Structure formats: structure tokens, C-alpha cells
Amino acid sequence: MHKTVNVRVITMDAALEVAIQPDTTGRQLFDQVVKTIGMREIWFFGLQNTDSKGLTTWKNLYKKDHNQEDKKGNHLQL
Image 1 (cartoon, rainbow, N blue to C red):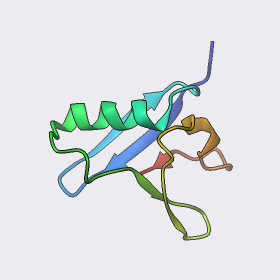
Image 2: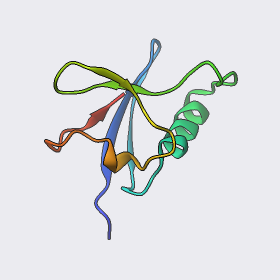
Image 3: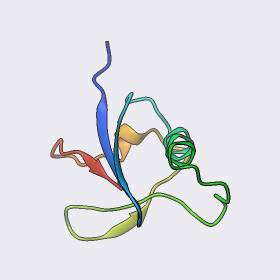
């Protein structure tokens, strides 16, 4: 069984935590988040995170999330 990756997504209105499988793509995560918060106009939005060096990057929606997670094993925060 695959280990799940815990992801915390913070919006202006809410914060939610999602456990995803390591083979989940950024697009699948994004779709799950917008469905959960009820967002309809999604073409203006994406997922971004700040890494341990303080650099803000946009999530690649075509890569699997475990390739983009914090290498220290911390929760991925978006």
C-alpha cells in the first residue's frame, strides 16, 4: 500500500487538509480542491507553494505531487 501525502491548501476563505496518493497529479489535486470549495471559474487560479528556501513556485499540474513535495517529509502546503 502506498504511503499517503498530506497536503494543506490555504485559500483566502478557508484551509483544508487532503491526503493524496503519491501518484496523484497536480491536476487531480487542483480538481479535488476546486470541487471541495465550490469554485466555478477556475481558469484564473492554480496552486502555488513556498519552499524551504522561501521561493514561491506554481505547482506543475502535470507532475505527480510526490515529486514536488518538501524533501524533509513535511506536509505540502499550498
